[in-house]
Length: 176
Image (cartoon, rainbow, N blue to C red; front, side, top):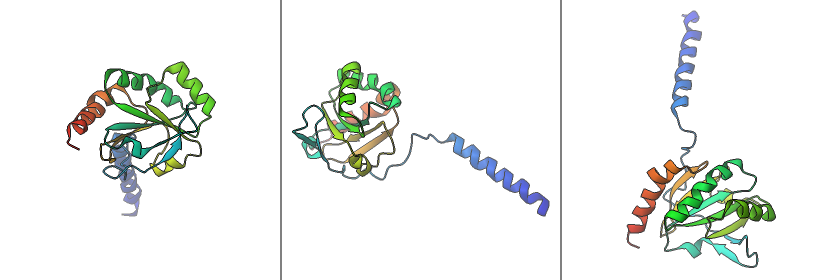
């Protein structure tokens, strides 16, 4: 009996590992889904004398994309965001996370700017309020200011086609 205990423990470990390998690490459940978007009022990247607030977006379906110029994965998703804005009528608000303002502006000049507006989260507190694990992360917020979806990691074209645009279209069609 004692000799079979290590074998049973090993088998359980293999089963747990097998289950873990089938999970998608990008699908981290968010406690914010279905809840009001945390409010913020932050300086604008290109106009630091003025602010952008979550309240400014009420009545619209919009995306919040958390990014930084130092983020390699943000660079890989950036062309997808540029195409999203070019091909669809959707506002993306950028949340520039713990970044150097000048480097962020240079990065956007080089890669293009898909953002309707960009809020500067210099100290990262707003990112924490939104439950950001790391950058990039993208949220879909409905007309009532409720978070409906969170994408962890770079947005890919398949995410746009299969999840993001169908949800946006649905939310835009819902009455206010």
